[in-house]
Length: 452
Image (tube, rainbow, N blue to C red; front, side, top):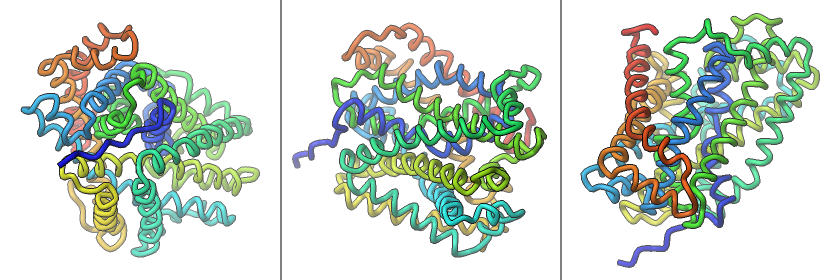
């Protein structure tokens, strides 16, 4: 049977914007600011930037090159490079399969908060216990989750160029403008400069092993690495796309949005708390519990709050689309299922498993795994366990099985790879060893066996 022609992005700009849209998501606007706040502000930012230009650059180059070289999604790409390593493609594909349902649940929460801000309910959202009471309801969170999952599936259903690329071309510039505008507004507020200093000035007394663990974990999550997404998007890139320059642009866009999100959120909490650093220790609840209180105390709080949650919604949607696309691409490549049929199957799967995640805060709140809710457990398994394993094993496969030359030759099809020597050392030695050390540290810390 003749294989259908593979979809591609229309050009380099379409590829870069779509890949940037995948990278820019809740990891940048929700996860990065609370981790930066928790792990010392400026020192976390410094470590993250160092990891981004070393580990991030190496892994993203590798994944995009694998995708373009094989013209396959991860489920088939690894096997095409080396038949004995085909199994790694299945592990890689498991990451978006695990992430998609709970990501859509969180996306539903974002729609809820965007809606309440738009309708002037900032004071209501700022009330103590509002977020906890909302997610504890059995049915309302399901409605918002259903809306978000449907929007994600619709974009994927429309295809690569008419759906994913077109959405990214419109949303990514808007997202960047909104982020810059809100950041400028926040740092101009009275008392905000103290937060700016905390966020930008490295305090080496706050440096710890967990700073590195948190920063590298955030790197995987934020840049869509070890999820199969960059391999999938790389497989849609045209042959004349320059992988090195594309990687730099994607990294720059992703890091800029994460940086601006921290510059927006950390100082705003300082303004709200009167400079109390303990207010930064809200963790994941920082966006849904603390920020509405910040907006409620601001001039034009409803407007700023609405703009912020619309921004988060745009970012989340571009990422969940890429997560779903990685699964759909795997199904069409491996099982030759028509694209639209695969999208519908994945949509139904996301609804079913997502319901379990949502009920983990209401009807099934007493059901835990390793003392974690269903959603938190899936997040732990995907981000703290499987993603580092995939990243480490990908480096080992490239470094010692197919050899770095297989990747660098693909990269050099469109120009000189000036960082080739650096890349070879990183992918063979530094990246896999460091990822392994951080993987063990993260798992032991999360399980409470060792505190670091």
